[in-house]
Image (cartoon, rainbow, N blue to C red):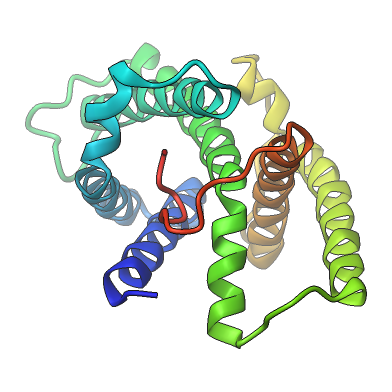
Length: 231
């Protein structure tokens, strides 16, 4: 495993971490929220610079199941992230307030894009989760198959998924994904840690969904590609 590969993997997960932190808007002050979001977008830009060859090969993508699943997912992620980034500038109250125009519509699109991006990012990770597991095995020195370990991981996946479904209702995700009005907001004065546990479970459930979708159709990412590589 090359140091460059591992560095890219770490940066990808740092970007996801900043994204999760940015979702806790009412826990952060507005300026911190915008700073966190700006760093996340910088890491996302770096991620796409590393993976620029994939975008160059996009017109030549073979008509096979996995490439087209990945293409659709990545284009969806691209659209949602562009919407999120552009509306971030439009509704900025701190870093870009000189060019911000505000408006309820821009704020509504910003929130909608944020929640959809969260879901698509998790599915994107799930499609490449076997790479993450291969890296973990290499770091921990694990080789060969072990029935007990496999069973434990699958039970953990079931537990995360069940808790993730519960968390989706606790966080009021579904109305936000459907752009429906909701008065459900998390009270960070009561429980901050619980928010991140629920959000982590929600992410985990979509990662499991993405991973086992690939397993179900009998396709796996190449062992040599990076963990959030859209290949």
